Image (cartoon, rainbow, N blue to C red; front, side):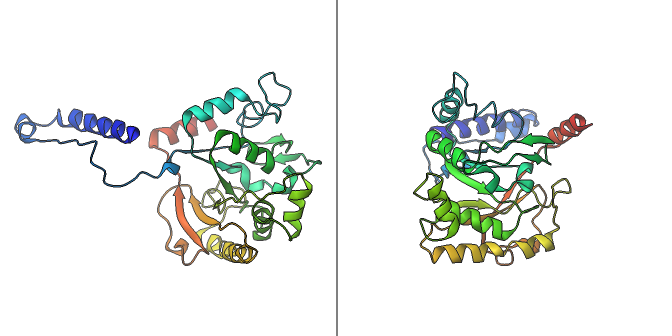
Amino acid sequence: MKRLKQLLLILGGGILLGWGSLPRAYAQQARIKIDPDRVIDQVDPLIYGSFVEHLGRCVYGGIYEPGSPLADEDGLRQDVLQAVRELGVTILRYPGGNFVSNYHWLDGVGPERKPRLDLAWHVLEPNTFGTNEFMKFIRKVGAEPYFTVNMGTGTIEEAQWWVEYTNVKEGPYYAELRKQHGFPEPYGIKFWSLGNEMDGFWQLGHLNAEDYAKKSPGSRQVDEGHRSLDSADCRWFVRLSSGRRPAVLEPRRAGRTEGLYRLHRPAHVRRQSRRQLL
């Protein structure tokens, strides 16, 4: 409620400033009534989210830095943990971002990690931080996990294995593999994104709307199969870079998707990004 009141006051101030430029006759007739105690509906706390990507110092040297005097027993930076808690982040998307379109989650679990060339940011990815390290981070900051599957170089089968690893208690191979890695209980991850900005030409494995819609329905089979194993129910989301959602991506046509997550960058930010790329 405190955040809602602050938002109403900011919006009210902006309206007043905007009307200050109108002719005096209109300004004299204007009336504004702000009632911060009037509740129209509840604000979903999950709108206060952020994301973690293997990019720059976000993970290595940021969240995760074993050997640092600031790190805890899991190699997580305690100053970063505290900062995230103070921000009140409620949900965190992982592992990207452009990074995810060439990320294979199996490289980042278990005792033997496989270093790979990150084709999004052109650096060596050691994979010493992966699914289980991220979940330790999530639990320490008190946020909800939101995983993104690889829809670029990855497959629906690989996504299925990841859901199995994270959400199924026992039985299937990857559920048992998680237990072998020292994590007996499933994480019960509810929120899953079907790739990252796959409509963008810059995305590794870029798909047009038709091809994306053909690949996406696999999420329905994944979800139905795991529910039969008494797994946590998954909610699948489409994530676009910008613009309108093509009709072909309506939820009934694109698998069991339940929502749309669209990235929007204001024009001045896009111009600044292009200058930095040049």
